[in-house]
Amino acid sequence: MLDIVKFSQIAPAMADLVGGKGLSLGLTAAAGLPVPSGFCVTSKAYRRLVGSAIDSTLLDALFDAYRELGGGVVAVRSSATDEDGAETSFAGQQETILGVEGEAALREAVERCWRSLHSERAKAYREHQGVNEASVAMAVVVQRLIDADVAGVNVHEGPARCDWNTDADRIGLGHRRSGCVRTSHAGSISSGSNLGTASFARSRRKAGASHASR
Image 1 (tube, rainbow, N blue to C red):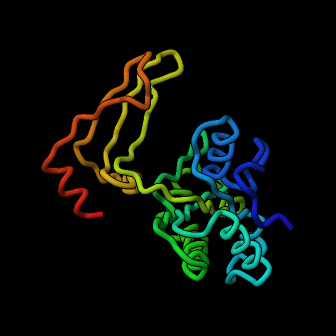
Image 2: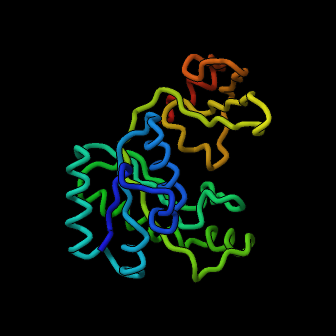
């Protein structure tokens, strides 16, 4: 029974088991990039318990994995099996819960992610994209939460170019980016630039307002 998979155990063929987000995080970590530690509650666990609460078997495995991660504050993120694909992104369609701390809160957050697969907006998105309802399932990422000062998204213009457009749009954790909440923190990274030293133009007024809303 494969209910929990650590990032370090994720292989390219596991998309249906850990979902699009889980697969991307696992492969990025395997490539040696600095991904905060975490694990996935697999789609196999979801399919076994669909429509039900977490059972004792999964609960024990979930809490063991959380303790092994070090406990504390984590992000709990939906990772649907059709998410982050070539044709369908599902950006912002399902739940992400930040600042989850403690075993009871972790259980509730995982169940919220499961339920969000069946929200009206998620169903409408799948219908619009022609996704077969019978094929979808929900894995859930549980990941160490980094208390970031600034977070954003890098969007590559295309494989033939080395220029990046960088949208550092959120003071703090950046989780509203998927919901299309924008502030004026923006910058660009030219070819040959060091991604870690990119500078961003910031609006002091909007930065202050955004930081105050954390």
